[in-house]
Length: 357
Image (cartoon, rainbow, N blue to C red; front, side):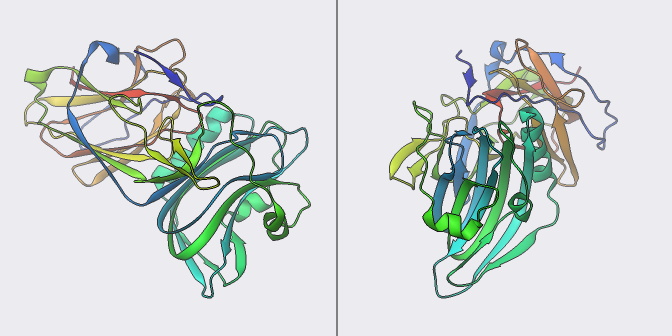
């Protein structure tokens, strides 16, 4: 099996179980090799609105616009950029309204990491904040005006080699142009945006920017898992073979593009099970170093956000049999899992389902 490493930034994932209706301990990583297990059959259905992905150029060499598109409705923005110049910069997200009426934006969920030189910590922090929710907030962009999406970044100094990563869910009632930009510290944001040019994407086959339909993905088991009958099995996510990458269009030039790694896609996973013994869940990174968070809901009421891994920042480098423990639950009870590839991660991953031991 091929392993995939996307971009230049490594990341890893592991999980600790928060208390549930069961008495469960926190485990470190365990030796479980997902390659030796049968693939569990699932139906995969994309849904939701549009994903705007801004990750190219990942290492931003000059001032300019990394990505832009005019959108409305149900939108997710995922941006991931490093200041690759020798001078301090700002990396900002601007919303421009060219219409004759005010645009109203509701930010329903968000996560922001950086600026920082610790790329693993940045990607992991974004996942934690996004999955934990937090307060939503409202923005208005008056007609023929603009407004920053993230006021914190307007005042942040991005030193050379620092990373900024964000994941924002937006409800937009009238079209606005979303611009992700890097610019001089002393420049006026609106004035800079009016004159800035779109930067070319990274060279090579990985054109990690574009607008993609279906920002969410529902993964449901085709049959009920029986721990006694089925034993240990695995579900592969974000490999472009079993789980295909989403295709889209680079709105800056109309070029078809592929989201290598499905960054910014949020997976909702439901694997029905038969009543009987308890079931344990693990996450097994297959591409290398990986770090993030994982969401889990048990019996529609016990909700957890789980660091992946819990005991260290990351895992998975040269240890592809290591798996992060997600928890043990009663079979026949509803378990919903939420997963999204963290920025700076290596993909793919395998979700391992096994009888509790």
